[in-house]
Amino acid sequence: MTQLPWGIAEAFTSDEIASLSTLRRDLHRHPELSWHEEGTATRLASALTSLGASDVRRVARTGLLARIPGRRAGAPTVAIRGDIDALPIQETTGLPFSSEVAGVMHACGHDIHATWTVGAAMLLRKAPAEGDVLILLQPAEEAAEGAAAVIESGALEGVTAIFGAHVDRRYEVGQVVAQEGPVAASADFFRIELIGAGAHGARPHESADPIVGAAMLITALQTLVSRRLDPAAPGVVTVATIHAGTADNIIPDRVLLTGTVRAVDAASRALLLEELRHMTDRVAEAHHLVARITFDQGTPPIVNPARPTAWAREAVRAILGPDADVPLAGTNMGGEDFAFYLERVPGCFLRIGAREPGGAWLPAHSSNFYAAEESALVGAAVLAETARRAAAALAT
Ligand code: NI
Image (cartoon, rainbow, N blue to C red):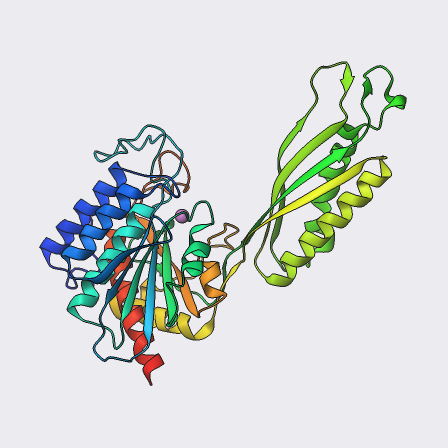
């Protein structure tokens, strides 16, 4: 085990560290996909019950909610959220506790997120916050559906602030990003059908060729970021799939394109979606094609507000020292459904360093990804202390 940062080692007993390690490895061995987290929920419910959490119950089908009573009845309630689902990837890490489920693995570190959420509950039982802390173990983050289902269930009614975090191997264990402003992008998806008229491949003048139109459109869509978006604002337009055609002497009558649009503020997001529609309609028209565009609206960007971020940052510095508080290494264009909570409740989303000293950076969602186990203890201590500071500040 790597040396634990000061403030972490003293927060847990060695038995607690051992039980969190066992929990993490159990979860890692038995990963479950979005909306199928039955075994995970059962395992986590027993972990929460055995540490003395009250009102442990299922929420949003395969999620869990528990309550850690505060020191004073009627003081503000704060929530800590950890996500619990895995990905359809065959694990190649070679870890001794590798996935035992073929084709499914914890390739995004949600085994650690679930563990640090239980760890935070453990610490809050020993040193409670001013008010109650709701422990939320959210399903289906990878499907970007779990947060919306939790909100729909009403489980967060009465919650005055919410905190969550993600592991990140760009930072060493003991480093934490608690940064105001954008920390995750919006993630919207589009589907464009270009409909023309098919013909013999030798007689293109008798067709309205959707393949040539699609080629022009794909190139034109790359000008949305370079010519329409303010160069100071990050954005992405990616065409990710193209499907058309059946034989090399036939011009097909339609092409299907799908892809994703990313932005880190609401105005850029709206502009890119609107300009995508405009460009698609005009390019289609120029090629005698009809365009059918559908958007699958995904998560909004995460923009951490100032006050809750300050509480999180103070917690990081108090537990890990001032050097632990590091800036985001670069704009993150990934999406995260925690954004739906922040549309309703103030809070902060942190990134918790998960690379062991001297270890390699490994991309999340790859078959060799894992998070250093000690990051679970860091996440637990930081989130518990953030909840305490938030509750204290909100109570005054
Ligand atoms: Ni993730």
